[in-house]
Amino acid sequence: MRNRDAIYVSSETGRLRKVLVHSPDSGLGRVVPSKAQDWLFEDIVHLNTIRRNEYDYYIKLLLYFLDDEKIKGQLAIIDATENHRNFYKPDHADFYRSEQVVELQELLSEILDDVSIKNQLVASVCAIEACSYHVQRELMGYSPATLARVFFSGTPNESEMIFPPIPNFIFTRDIGIVINDHILLNKPMKEARKREALIAKYIFFHHPIFAAYSDKIIELTDTPHHFLLPNDTEVERVTLEGGDVMVVSGDHVLIGVSERTNSEAAAQAVRKLFDKNVVKKVTIVKIPRKRDYMHIDTVFTQVKRNVWVMLGDFSTERIKGLQTDEVHRALRIQPHRIDELEILQFEKGKESEPRRFHSLEDLLVAISVDDLGCAPESVRIILSGNNEFPYDAREQWTDSCNLLAIREGVVLGYDRNDKTTDAFRAAGFDIVDVKDLLADLEAGRICVDELSDTLVLMPSAELSRARGGFHCMSMPLLRD
Image (cartoon, rainbow, N blue to C red; front, top):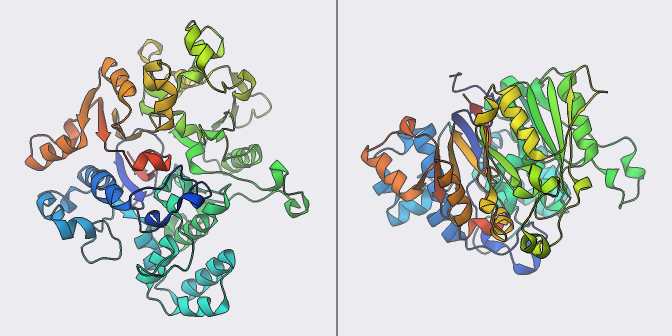
């Protein structure tokens, strides 16, 4: 295991040791129906349900795995009514404060103690949000903790709003990705996420936990003269989000071209990763530009070295047109065209000779075999909705393929995806409800190191409305 203070990720499934998160803030409770889709939500959500009955289980479980001193023996106290509310608030005295389950808002508050950084960031945010000079001066008088809360939620108190909320900040995967000992920063496609990218940039360049990596931060730049191009030109801006980047081995990174990440960004990332000798191989996975998919991690994620979960639409069988279920084919709505899936693998020094894969399934098998040393016959692909129509599409929409591995073979997923759960069970995985698992961990009936091949079911009635699973809600900083 590496030093717990290090920043290093070379796997999607190695034991998670440090992760960057952001607990749901009051901004989520202020999203109105008319603005929900502008702010990239499918629906309005109930904040207290997310905080107390859904996301709280996520934080508790992360603490048991990453920093059990903060949680062991404390569940009864945390679950007391008032403490339950404050345990997840970064600006409250009862906040859990962990150096392994790292809260983004707390990091922002800490860098705002520096008056110079505070001045710069207030001016930058006010420019983005077109604030008056009076508001800018007023913000300078706020304490670092209050200002950090305003930057995240848009509000300093229950009755006043200064900025629009940025509810997508709970999806910390999208702000940046650690690739070995480098950090690739995002360039979001949607206007609603611009403030996120700005705040993240200041944190990564100024917070002490990233100080040793300041020369290893990779930023993408817009194309030359992009400001002269018409607004409807796809290449006017370089856009990349972390949900389209997967570190499958120390030498190999996947980059998606999707609704949120464009080809120019992918090409630029390949060049920079090769030029800096960060990796030896990059695979570009182009998927249909559809809201259904959004990022590649909504279509597939890794469970263990030889096991993946994936939407069956991209399997070898479907791509080759061998699907025999006529009802399935007849009822499928807006099927993707074969030419909308393109997979090219580039090796450093051989960029002019890319390897082409004809299905996503072929790529995943190749990663397990060629990069991770698995026997070909051991590789398993678990399909969303157990590959049954219409459950495959329904459950992919509610993030059946967006799972977070907290150690090899132990993954977190939503409890609402019943058919996908059946597929995991059929593949030999134990199915455990997070409430039962927490009770067993607290009572000492089991320890985290004893878990293997386990799907942990997490409550999801409200969280799933936000269109992101636990892979989205995590930015790993350190894995074994």
